[in-house]
Image (cartoon, helix red, strand yellow):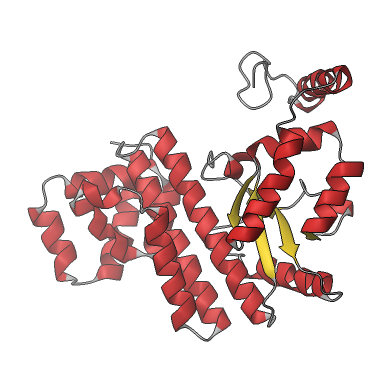
Length: 309
């Protein structure tokens, strides 16, 4: 049963060769009710899962019991990531260990989704949790790697901010720091450059999108809290305040997160909207529908850019 039955047999052979004579694998297939059926169903349904299983064959043990396919909580992921950061002194090995966690958890979520263990809301929330822990952990590693104690915050935007990530979603974020040092911007830029390098994964791609930052691609990749305050007060456009509706801090000290949230709240949740801003919002929505909708797409059925989206 599945779209790729022949490919499933090939994937099963490769998996069996990798695990060799592992007693637990053979025992699971023999004794666990439904394990073999679940494994073959997944292999026949998703090449994405089959490929990831080749990198983490020990994850096959999950097929023995459906409870193991329930996504790990954010707290569990944070504890594991923090233990790695504390234990490892080699930046490259630490980064790879964090990548392994992400691959493993995305695989767990994908298998659970294929077998119907989790619903759509649980899937998107779990994927968002994995991305958040991955980003915050890698930022800690990046700061350590450039020998900086700067207080840097990560603000989730878009689908990540709304905890609506899919398997192919980018991580839309903006970055903020809090410091009065004249060298802080330089240190912050160095940390961002290191972060963008660390999160790369040739096995399971991870893309950070910083385009929602002030001034977009023409602006610095990270700004101070004071710079954000100045920008939002003097230069930000209506669409930028609309984008902040799903903004959510996911990293940084509690003080930085609270101060940034307090800053943006007065712009995204104003006590009243002027007629000009209401017109701007309507024009922005009309422009999205007219200019960004793919050619030939039905506006009534397009989930992201269609009417009512």
